Length: 230
Image 1 (cartoon, rainbow, N blue to C red):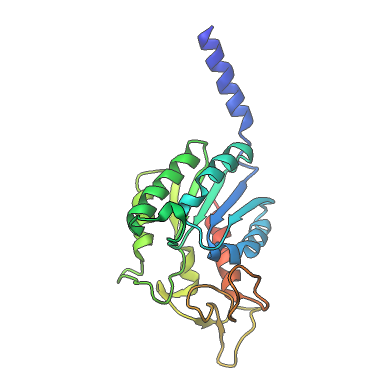
Image 2: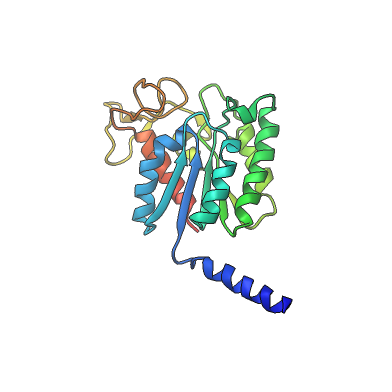
């Protein structure tokens, strides 16, 4: 009787999982991911992924999203979760905690929440701020945390998506234009905000849509979508 119940439960769980040819991608992140969310969705669509959802907001840390991760994992049943966080510390769940220790613990917890549901996790290197230390290897301290958390876990990988907005991992405000981008006379385009953190090339109140085209957000969104590819 017990064995039969276990078999039925296993069948039910398997039936509830969608096939891998029907990918569902969820993006969790802070303001950088929020700025890039439309580009991410559009780029994923060009890859043939029609089921995406973005769960992003400025100033948030990983620990702000644990309940939502559990809910989305159960209700929406994604195949891939992309986590894009740059190290915010203002949330209540971050108070009194060392940044690196907290993000190591919280990334480990997020990975556990998601992989227990059979979801592959992509930890993303966010582009550094202009005041953020970067090592000789082009990595920030948070970049190294992601690699520690992913080590030895076949369902977790790290993707240096933020590299598309850097010079060998280091902050730069402008980069050579890509085809189709609004190019300055010197052949470069602004990819970071004057605040040294965000993407909108003009100063803008927090969490408001950029009033002009934002090549930095577009590039980062495409990189996030590429990171979600198998």
